[in-house]
Image 1 (cartoon, helix red, strand yellow):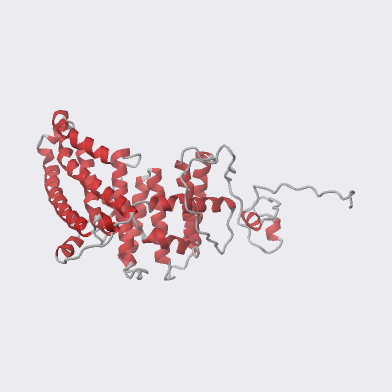
Image 2 (cartoon, rainbow, N blue to C red):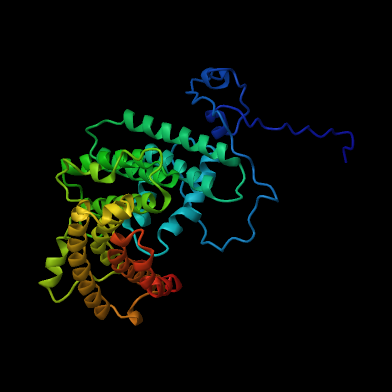
Length: 400
C-alpha cells in the first residue's frame, strides 16, 4: 500500500459563479461582466445572479408536511441552475397539487408541463411562480427578500425570452397566454391587483385576435383559456373584497374587459340555455364550476359595491342601482340553483370521486354564501337586521 500518497484537497466550489459555469458544474473565474472561462472557449456567459437561495438545513426542513407524490422529472434542453430547479420542484410538489386539490384543470394537468419542456419563457415564469409561492410559505428558508428577488429575476428572464421570439411563430400566442396566466397568478398572490388586471387585459387581447388550436380533449383551447381568465377575475374580486383594495384601488377588474369582444363574465352564462334544452348537462364538477363562475364573479362585485356605501346611503335614493343589481342577481341565483339541483340529481355522490365530492361541497357552500350575501349585502351596517341571519351564517361556517 502506498502510504505516502497524499490526498488531494477538496476545493469548495464557488456558489457565486456565472450561470453558465454553474450549469456546467465547473469553477468560474468570476470576472466582472463576463467570465473569461466562458468567453475564452467561445461560450456565451449568461451573467451572474444578484442573489442566491440559502441551502436547506436541518432546522429548515419540514418533517411535518403532508406526504406528497414525487414530482414528475422534467429535463429542459437549456442550462438551468440549482436554484431554478428547486423552485420548479416546489411548483411540481406543492403548487400544482394545491391548484388541483378540488377541481381538474387541463392547463395545469397537461399544458404547463408540456410547454415548460419546450419554452424557456414558460420555464422562467414557472420558476418565478415557485419563488412567489415559497415567499408566502411560513417558516421556509431563504427569507422573504431572497424569494422576491428570485421571482423578479426570473420574471425578467421570461419577458426577455418572449421578446426574442418570432411573433409569427404559431406557438407564440399560446406561450404568451400561458405566461400571462402565470404572471397574473403571481400578482394575485402578491395582492398587486392592478398589475394582475393588466395581465388579464393582455391575455384577453390575444384571445380576441383569433381562435386557438384544439386541445387533446377535443375542445378549442380558446374555451380553456377563457375559463382560466374567468376564474382569475373572480379570484381578484374575492381577494379585494376580503383583503382590501390595496395600493392600486383605482384599477378595477371591470375595466379589464371593456372593449373586449369576449363576454368574460356574462350576466347570464350562455351555457345555461343549452343545459335547459338538453336532457343531459355537463358531466364533471369542473364544468359545473365553469358555468357557475359568472354568478360568483358578479356577486363579489355586488358585495364590494354594498360595502363601499354607508348605511345612510343604502337607505337613500343612491341605493337604487344597488337594489336593481340585487334583483337581477337574485334571478340569476335562482337559475343557478335550478341548474345545480338538476346537476346533483344526475351526478350522485356514489359516482363521484373523493376529489369531485370535495369540489361539489365547495360549490354548494359557495351557492349558499351567495344566497345569504344577496339578502344581507344591502343591510350593511344595520346590526339589528343582520342579527336575524346569524343562525344561517353559523351553519355556513360550520359546513366550511
